[in-house]
Image (cartoon, rainbow, N blue to C red):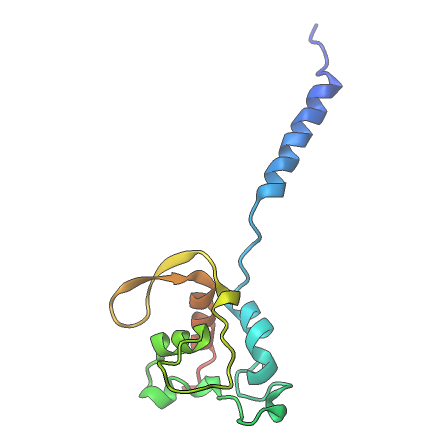
Length: 137
């Protein structure tokens, strides 16, 4: 006759399971979620530059739906990612804050359009990919 599993073993197994859940990393937000959290206040959820804070700024936020159109039909991935990250290329001050530290995340190989796979924070990649989906043809 089989003996029942001691109650201690059951609690020990449950305790180990809790350790696994406690150490699981937080899920990475989607590009759309990061855009809503960090960008929509100025650029609006649609990306047209009509966010809640747009009227309070000295300069109207860019209409992000026209980035590809303004670049001959090609989305300017690397310059857009540089702008989001906070790199301005030494072109003076800018209204847009530096989001680099907020988007610091796991690095993934990513080709920003120059044919070179560059280690890039996944959250930055996801925002750029989200912006590609809102481009007006």
